[in-house]
Amino acid sequence: MEPMLKMDDVFVVGVCDSYADRTAYAASLVEKAGQKPPLQSSDYRTVLDMDSLDAVVISTSWEYHIQIAVAAMQKGIFTAMEVGGTYNIQACFDLVKTQEETGTPFFFLENCCYGRRELMCLRMARAGVFGEIVHCDGAYRHDLRKEVSFGKENRHYRLSHYLEHNCENYPTHDFGPIAKILGINRGNRMVRLVSMASKARGLRQYIRDNKAEDAALCNTEFTQGDIVTTLITCENGETVTLTLDTTLPRIYSRNFNVRGTKGMYQEDGDYVFLEKDQKDKDIAELDMNPQLLWKNADMYGEQYDSDLWKHKSQGMLAAGHGGMDYLILRSMVAAAKGETYPAIDVYDAAAWMCITALSEQSIRGGNIPVEIPDFTNGKYKNRTQRSRGKYALD
Image (cartoon, rainbow, N blue to C red; front, side, top):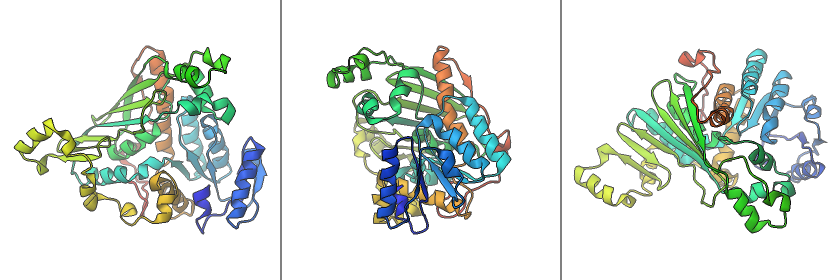
């Protein structure tokens, strides 16, 4: 909400949360921004009944996203929904069905699609620089042990998820940009996946070391495996590996990796390797000293960076996550004002979120292959809906 309050075409008229102190804090931010005091409510239906409402941003705990989005679309309110997976595959079908029946525009707020390197690689892939794309890797590698372990104190929903589920619970940060590169729902689709999970030890060790006074939690067996690996095959022959890694000590990485017949990009090391730019003797040297390529991506960014990053502003960079938050929100506002089709739509949301439910099914069944539904019902083969303008991803 804070970056949106700095936009001169956005007015926050209502805020909602289960906790009154949170709505009070949100309302204070609105007033500090020079806007009128917003409606405060603990019931989202009260906000959706407001006559002055043009759009709603849903950023609750994951399990309520689709429920609220369906209610908003049924009222004809432009619906922007935050990311996360869903444990209920039927909910994905309900989301798509509601959007199709109501015609209400829907926007999925996956900010990593607007990352600088993700947009650069999207342009490079579309230009054929990598050749034919064969494989992509992605990950959500983020040490969340403190956030999860102190979930009760911080009223944070992740704790219950890690106690009750074992799956790829946060697939969209890593898969979203990959899906755009592979043309998922735009001439290509995911066909099936297989998931496997390691044992769960990280949280228990962290709690014993840092929260020993919580006897109940110290003796709790967590369900969520420390490392979850998901393999996806696509109709056009590509493969994707996703990794969830949130309960062991590490530094942050999304391990964004694009592999094609003519070259690659690798986030860890931030380098591009294109066969045309190397000689045989150089490749032999790089095999022994790959660090010589590290941090060379800026050189390719001069040609392939998105204009959104070439002309970045200080306000954009300060908005959060290095600028991605500003770009996804401006893309959403453009769609809400009717200037373009949503850059990340309801079919994208359903396809990316369903990975959570299907990975849980695969793990529970002993790492069995699971078919991935086509939420477009065949329309992906020749879709005409396209985002336009400066924030387009199509």
